[in-house]
Image (cartoon, rainbow, N blue to C red):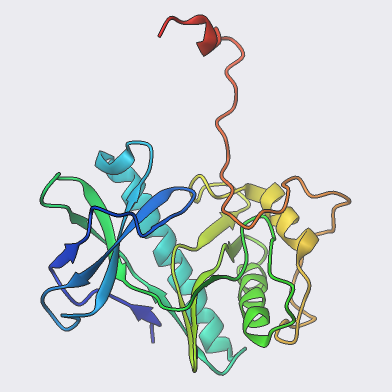
Length: 239
């Protein structure tokens, strides 16, 4: 059984005059479905910043991360760690008619909150609902035999479960996109992770490091391109 939440629609009306929310990499606009099973329900449209809206590989990479995240969430559910459901919003790449730009469309999430980041930030509330999300991240590392870490968990908590969106997968090979901080990111995350009531003491962890490579921040951190020392600096070039 796959714990996913999809559009079930082919048309939306988007209010493009006002940005509904803005993250590290995407701007978000609100709209509503105008046909299909979700007709009348709210949705969001997301577009990458920095002119990447026409580059298909950004969207392909995003959808591959979503597929990987879904497999992890399904495994967490099968393990029976918690008794409530965790759904993952599955976006689709649609084309905005007025501009021809690619956008990601998915259902709206109410009660939006951030549960952790890819540097290990997490709210220190002692709340069971937050601790369940920290357990999901820890489980992903253990269940993948220390290969992957599902993190940057955000979405909504409801009476009987969660809906997540835009997760990050970090890997030992640093091959899961610009938010994959690699082994240094995984170590930074676990440097700050505190097991709660849903983590299993037998779950694997990396060897502890004395200092985290990445500073803890609530927002999503991305890797930077390395400096090309053999080239002249941009500041020496006339604009």
